[in-house]
Image (cartoon, one colour):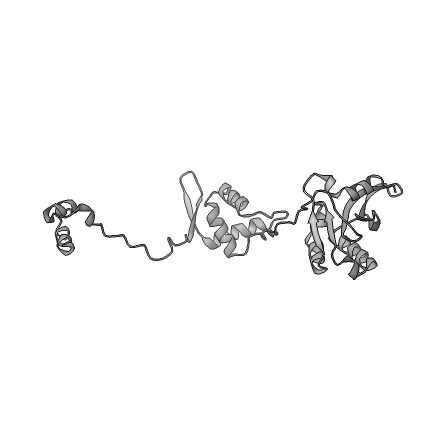
Length: 249
C-alpha cells in the first residue's frame, strides 16, 4: 500500500488526496526526512571588508588583518584581548566581529594566556577551633607594623599554636610573598620536628601571600591540612588576630 501511495505522490498527487484514494489514514504517509547536511557548517571567511570611504570598501585577506593586529599588539603597554582588538579594528573601518577576531588571534598565537582556574578552596568547618593538644592547629596571619627608623611599614608574619597560645615563628621584612611564607613555614616545621606536625592543620585568612600556589603546594608536599576562614569573620582565626592586636614593636 505504501508503494502505491508513493507512486501517486511521485506523479504529483498530494499526500492527503492519495490517502483518500487508497482509504488509509493520512498519518501513515510521512514526508521524506531531510538528510542532515554533510560537513561541519560554513567555511571560514578568507577576506574581510574595510571601509575606505562613505560608500567604498576594500577587500583584505586574513593575513593583512593579522598584520594589523600584530602592529597594534606590538605597541608599548598594549596587552589587549580579542574584545578590545575587535573594537580597535572596527574603529579603523574593519567590518569584523569578535568571533572572527578571536579565531584569527588563536590561529596566530596572539591570545593572552588564560587564567588558571584553581580548584575550590577548603573552608573551615567549625567556626571555633577545638584542640586538645599542641601542634594540632596553627593560625597564621600578616600584620603591618610601623618601623620608625625607616619611616615606613613592614610585614610581620606570625604563627601561633591554638592550644598553647605560643608564638611559634615569625617573619619581619619590607616585602612578603609566597616564598617568604614558605621558608618561614619550613623553619617552623623543622624546629618542631616532622613527627610532631603529622596531624596538624594550618588556618589563615584569604591574604594573597597565604593562599598562593607556592604555599599550597608546599603544604600538600608536607601532607599538612590547609584551610581558609570565610571572608570577613575574624573570629574564625581569633587567636592570631588577638595576638597581633596586642603586638607592639
